[in-house]
Image 1 (cartoon, rainbow over the protein chains, first blue to last red):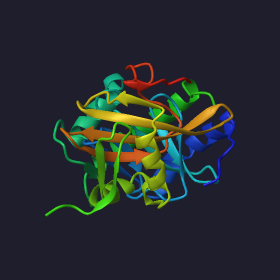
Image 2 (cartoon, rainbow over the protein chains, first blue to last red):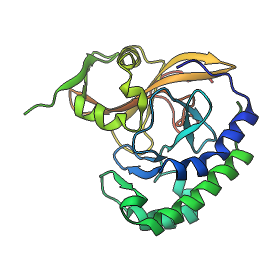
Image 3 (spheres, one colour):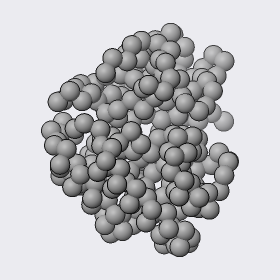
Image 4 (tube, rainbow over the protein chains, first blue to last red):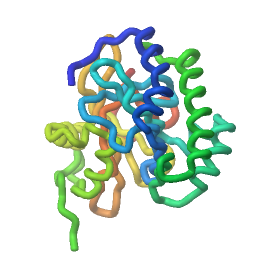
Length: 137
Length: 116
């Protein structure tokens, strides 16, 4: 993929598309406990996308048109949810605690209410933090 | 029965490293870089000539090898390889291309210098 030259304003606009893209493209919530990483993304993130860190907390895979194609949060359990209490509570209901297996929540296959609860708070958190804590472009 | 290997090479210390095909396929769902055939050469480079290595923030005997690929507008792009070490063999957990070092400022590199 070509190296992208991107402005900070462009990134904010791109991040704002996440909630609608996630709904339209039926993104799933995946917690990979072996890797310690959380994904809010299609089951398979498309090729020809490039990872870009938005804040210290999360990164997004973008395509060449700066369309978001998946969110990645490293060190989810040990870092991210430690200072996102509301997400931690819902996440516990959705994913449980402990264990080593990867768990994916696909709203078309169940847990729709839990999915929507986590999606809603996640969407607002991602957008809020992009507004206030974005790392330099 | 042994798993088919996607990659086998030695790291910068001469310790054997393997990346099974099963693991690559599994991780490639969320890391599209792993579906790009040419990325394997970047993984090798990161293992054999890492610019710096951080310990994983949570798991023991797990390390993040970083290789600086290029910089654009002052923002660096890395190949990052997560390695789980065993007694005389290391396993690749996953690999991808971030533009950020998540461990920076939280732990000290065990190898090399991470100069932002």
